[in-house]
Image (cartoon, rainbow, N blue to C red):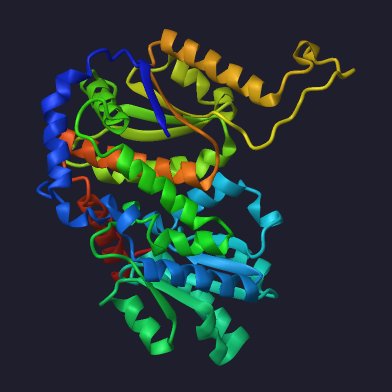
Amino acid sequence: MIKFSYEESGIKDLSILQSEIEAAHNALHNKTGAGHEYTGWLDLPENYDKSEFDEIITTAKDIRNKCDCFLVVGIGGSYLGARAALEFIKGGLHNFDNKPNVFFIGNSISPMSLRQLIDIIKHKDICVNIISKSGTTLEPALAFRVIKDLMQHKYGDEASKRIYATTDRNKGALLQTARENGYKTFVVPDDIGGRFSVLTAVGLLPLAVAGLDIKALMNGAASARREYSSCGIENPCYQYAIVRNLLLRAGKNTEILANYEPRLHYLAEWWKQLFGESEGKQHKGIYPASVDFTTDLHSLGQYIQDGQREMFETVINIEQVDSDVVIRPSDCNDGLNFLEGKTMHWVNEMARIGTKNAHVAGGVPNNLITIDKLDENSLGELFYFFMKACAISGYLLGVNPFDQPGVEKYKKEMNSLMVGGEK
């Protein structure tokens, strides 16, 4: 299971928030807190729709057999969880040795990126998963228009058999389009918001198509649900929520999620949406940032070490690696032969410990989250750990962790400019 350590955080007494934790726990589990109508994710790992889950597995096999490229069209919670999981398990180079290739589009309005993708896939067999609760979100809607047109020219009437819609069960523009065109559909549950939806069809269909073991993913999340169900400061999930809130009250208003493995880059992107959209309200919240070490030690490392002291770090550590490289003797004049016989994992671990020591000495509190290894079971645990910690942390902060009123404001401004013809 996940281990959480706050020994280097500077926080000594978690019991300060004992009563607040109990209130937050009860608000979440008794469904009396703000946004309680969007807490379907809480029991999902064990109470999910088993028939839909089986249909996802069957459909994924069919997709894998008939396409070279699988396009996942979505933005925010409609793609970040799936991309985080895919790269966590298979790495950023997954498309070089995985069939079908999986591409994530509709998460920007860049014409160059979309055109580049079209040039890559135009002579390949394609299937598409459009993910949107409404079907009217600008970025995926525009991308889907372009891809739908491409597929209709390529496949004619057969195009509809290659398009899969994950959307609202009962309403919305995408559901209407799916019904009119005969697309196979999967459900975005009414009681689960986008950033909490990775363990629904939103994340599971793309991951099953990519060849991930979604049963193990759900089993890991189910284990975490049981492990982190207790109310009190002994719960590691709640400890993380307490420590980050106590650090905020001490003036540390930025949390940096750090990793020492590139396969965790998109997990951090998912984490940033989860916490940023959940807590950033009423002029409150901890600003979520991320770094990829040791790479970013050669860029942001200076600021973290010697810049303003408003930040703390939470480091994700991996106990077991699935592959390693032994350092051999060499005639290179690089002065590194003292590492002969060591592994790169060992060197990476020394970098992590050394960086932690330096940053703590420099006034940056450090937390440590340790996972067993980079597999589906561990990832399911980690997804659930962060989602529950986020909900509890939001309640400690005094905000509704399940809405996003600020997001709607920029959309209104942007739409008024486009409708008005501004350039």
